[in-house]
Amino acid sequence: MKNNTLGAIYLALAASIWGGMYIVVKVVVAVIPPLELVWMRYVVAIIALLVIGFIKRQSWKVHKRDLLLLVVIGVVGNAISIVTQEYGTMLSSAQMGAIITSSTPAFMVIFARCLLKERLTLKKISSVVLATVGVTLIVGNAHVDESSQLGGIALLIAALTWALMSVLIKRVPGQYSPLLVTTYSILFAIIVLTPMVVGQLPQIDFSQLARPKIWGGILYLGIISTACAFILWNRGLQLMNASSGGLFFFFQPLVGTFLGWILLGEQVGGTFWIGALFILIGVLLVIKEKK
Image (cartoon, rainbow, N blue to C red):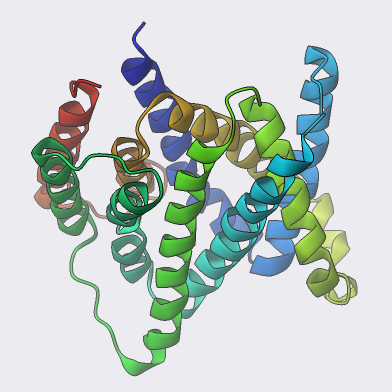
């Protein structure tokens, strides 16, 4: 199977997992605040990743010259981006969050050009434009008022930092596996977040964690949405151009809206299917692009 096709499968799976994640977050965040929830899912994820590494006999050795890059990836992508996304969504509307974070692939195209010197092609630009139009049709027009401005700024920071992290992953030497890169980046994120979380943990009602929906949700977020999805995303980016790979981020609002319709009974209009078609056309353009 060609690298482009295999990378596309990995990226689509990762983004689809994140698209379904908001249903779980909606339940768990009622008990655990956003920052503490991010920290908990990372702790669960790091345990899962270490177990996988032990089974696969993964070598954790990293050259000193590459350590700083992994630190930046962890702090920028796994700490700053995820936390600002959680708070941005909390302070604004879900529609506004979907629209702003859907700018991530466009930022990836820019960062890939500046940092990796990837060539911009008409096909790449067209695919991003098509997918962006598709996402806008799906989420509708978000009403922005003054109270949502802070949330909008946080979401913009989340989109920028996730795009930068995704491009920086392409700078990681090929000798390091996606498992190693994911484990180290999450470890550094935990180190950064722990001082901010420790003082807040006693305020959580831990008796609520005994509920299957809550502990099951935390396990899902940590193992599936973080450990597995991050490995898939990192591996997919290693196989594709960063500017092309970013397009698969659009699967997140697509799958999220679809699952909300199926599982939560949320209303989905005809524009959803038109938007989905635009996204799929954009993705097909990228998959068929020659290296």
